[in-house]
Image 1 (cartoon, one colour):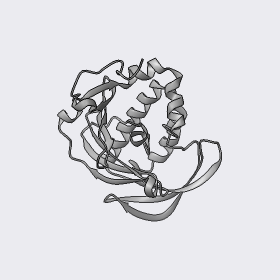
Image 2: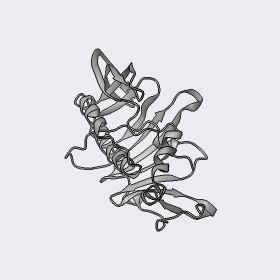
Image 3: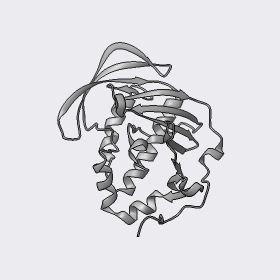
Image 4: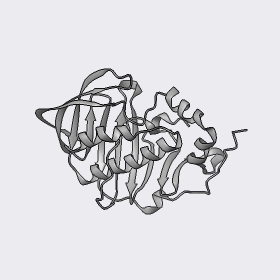
Length: 230
């Protein structure tokens, strides 16, 4: 199972001291036939993430002990410890993500300017403020895109949960995302999360109802080394 559907469009945020509750969301990243929808459930610092598309099986689970990939190989659930696998792969893990065009900072480098357009836009039922964001991309080149920031408790928790996930993934592949934290501090001083960025990322839906705790329970003991590796 490819990692791209699970990693695309992920946003970072500052983890606040606001109490964990829970909810679920669907985000869409990419455009046209390349668009991928990802379903995310979160609660009490845990997360479950899978591709919200028919025929796509498997999902990722984050708990306080780590991040795991769950698949249904051979009709039986198989749980892969991503931390153990990526540590074993060393620098190859980071190279693999780069080869798939996956970044843990959403492609935003340093914020140059965040200009309020004075407009509002409703995304996923949440009223957001529209800004023109000028920033440096991964190559250091400046570009400007519209970004919509909204305020909603469940949106803040979604942002917090994804921030935890991104830091854990970055640690697995030895990627430093510390500098990006300043960027998100700037953005999220104006809202609880990103509702839309340009035409390649948007929040499709958000529900503040906490999912059952069983949704974050692993269906089998984690395998430290998958059978398909030598």
